[in-house]
Amino acid sequence: EVQLVESGGGLVQPGGSLRLSCVASGFTFSSYSMTWVRQAPGKGLEWVSYINSGGGTTKYADSVKGRFTISRDNAKNTLYLQLNSLKTEDTAMYYCVQGASKYGARGQGTQVTVSS
Image (cartoon, rainbow, N blue to C red; front, side, top):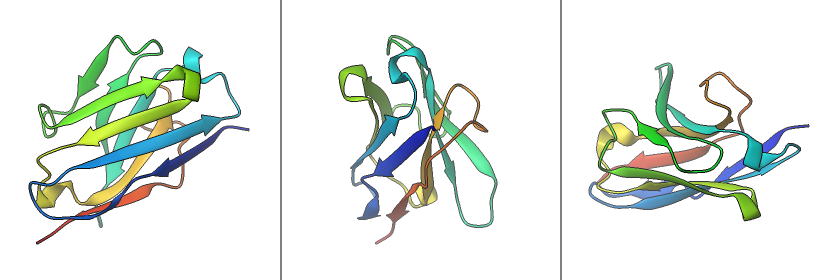
């Protein structure tokens, strides 16, 4: 059974930083690309970032490019998302997703709230 457990969210002021983590189990993590998505209140799922299985290829939504960094540690079965220069519009529930589609298996999410 695929299990993905996100953590690291919280309340932060605009301009602040957070580091999200996602611990994976139940599948061979190192064989899968991974994706971060987010969902703001009242809105649909928004694709945020992608990383291939080896970590050598990354992609970002235009809205987060230059501010967020995706990475992974295959030895620890863990996916990361570094969030810098946070804006109020980044407020959302953040989910890690198995695979390249935003509709793959995902965890319970971690809430990021950006507010002064």
